[in-house]
Figure (cartoon, rainbow, N blue to C red):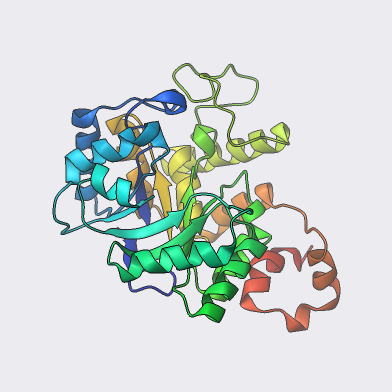
Length: 329
């Protein structure tokens, strides 16, 4: 397992994170999974044994039951591992004394950011939280929050948690460049698109039973189905050639992307976690990466196509993370 610094923090995290949305099975989360304590403990132990030191949960997962189950498994004084969730009620549910990384789960455009950043700063000063981050923010949201932190001398975000896959590369327009420029770590949620990139879903075939999509799960939205199947076809071809699963190839592509710190894996079975964990050891060749890059590349939007045409000698590393693949096109 590879370990990487999370943004500008001193926190070293594994390149794979364990997700816990399948714990509990209450409310809307039942579509994803309904694992109890004993089943969840077996999966947690598997991930810890593989070197995972980052576990992602949230109070909205199964109305807090996911946190409670995690608390039964690893509660008590903290020794190893890293948690991500949402604060004092979460601390109680998980029977722990500190949250290593506390992330805002969603943007709130109606509460002044000054109040939000002050509250987060207070949690750090109280010793309840070590680092703070955000999730599902836009690029300007992040820069505004960082600006408030700098101006008011508050603690700043060290990370953002985003949706980013071979199928959904929208984050490359703003979110990855801002992370590279501002030194933020990037954690990726749903890295195989809710299972769509696992190889189980294929062109002109019925949705497999037992999958999220079969149960009516609607994330992520697919705007170009033909493009999705072209990506899946390429994933499967590479996977078959390497003797691994398409999911492993999709995860390995992400782990190797500039700016990405860790990908969050989830599942309901030992086999799913075992397969996903193996992606940490899979190194794709340059030719394999190019095939995946080419089949999934998004067009440059304005102002990026204009910057490509007129400002190539003035672009930073953050700019080039998006524009460089288009310079030869």
